[in-house]
Image (cartoon, rainbow, N blue to C red; front, top):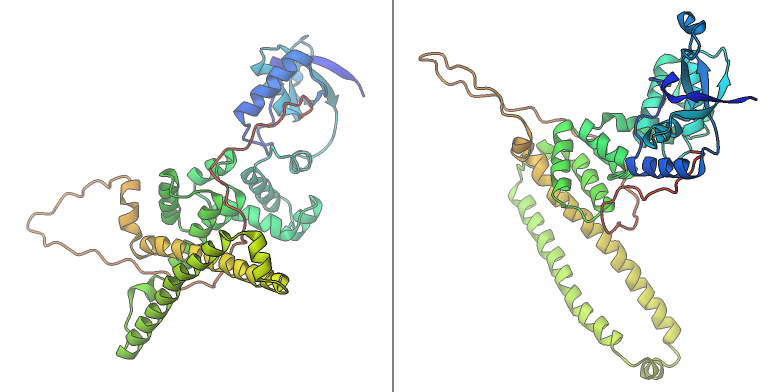
Length: 369
């Protein structure tokens, strides 16, 4: 293996390589590292088949096989040359692309959207390819590949936020199941800071996904007097139960203020039993809180599902007014057809909500990236 130094301007990027997004701060860190310490691992390039340049010294052209990030960092650092390994291979364009995917897919630098596009390209261009084969080839599960492919249903706006790391993959999968209009509505709330973190965004998008296919059921409430009475009883019972929690809260606060030594004497012989009782209460509170949080997400999502056009009006460009025909009677617009109810998806996993929406933390600069 021979390492040679090649001028930067004789090297071009592979336009069909899987990576499209390069986090600016991390790239600048790498450029600073390269400028100070040099390049630890050469990039890999191949000669381009341009016979007209072969006999002109210094005019040979090369294409990057691996190491575009390092090449970009050199340019950012103002360097004019870069260490390279020149490879000669007879791989097809798709085989070369798959090799690049394999080199990048397990790195944190490759975004979920880039992975999704890479999987989609292989499935489209490789004859007889299926999700299970692609998954096995890259050491992933079929579920992993399918979840990545689902991200391609995201609007461009959401994809940009996923690429930057501002929106996590779990939330992105839930948002991808929404109609484009509902995706815009979610992003409008997100941009206003309506969600404390990614976990709240997951709950909201999941709730809206459940409701967007059930508009008819929510709009048409042809209930009998008995059904209305039953609903009212349920409401009264639920609200009464929740109101009683305040009484329990007072008891717990009183217990929390008790002197532990006096508490031990008062519960002599039952401390362990009472502690188990408190653990059961704490577990029930956690589950109830999660369920009420889901209810809050459903309540907020219901407003969008019931009247998406009103929610999205400020997000859509105004349509040009059509010239009115003289003496023509106004023709009422037909109401849009509601979508049929969809199958109930699995509920999102519970996880701790982050305190704020952040882009990925800066990665340590590494010249071997």
